[in-house]
Length: 139
Image 1 (spheres, rainbow, N blue to C red):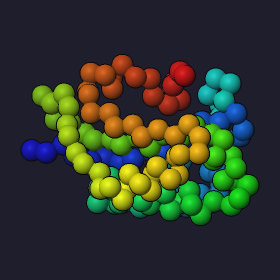
Image 2 (cartoon, one colour; image 1 turned 180 degrees about the vertical axis):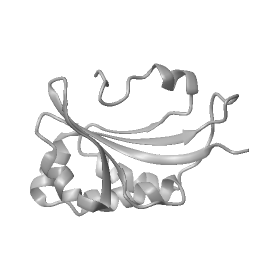
Image 3 (spheres, helix red, strand yellow; image 1 turned 90 degrees about the vertical axis):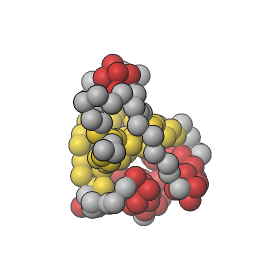
Image 4 (cartoon, rainbow, N blue to C red; image 1 turned 135 degrees about the vertical axis):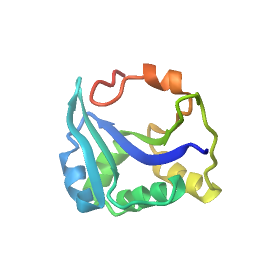
């Protein structure tokens, strides 16, 4: 049985408040968390639509970001961003492998190239268990 794709979380960390970005994204996303995280603001969202896989989900999130107003895009450009791709593994599995289409990686690269962007692909179950998650993330 193959690992099951869960979702892609888009995590944004900034010195500026992120409430306005969450509000602009509106019903197109589900907000997992929006608030303080140590000395920064933290916003974690996922697509409100159900997509067939990581490529379609990432493209959907990119479309949401690309539709942000110029003011929100300035906050986005200065923030730290992470596209976190999640898979559910079977109990005896410790990792999984998957591919992303080149057009998906190119679109993410364009959105992230300005400042501090990352694409996390965590497929190590033991490592993942040791990594703090929102809202307990420690930079």
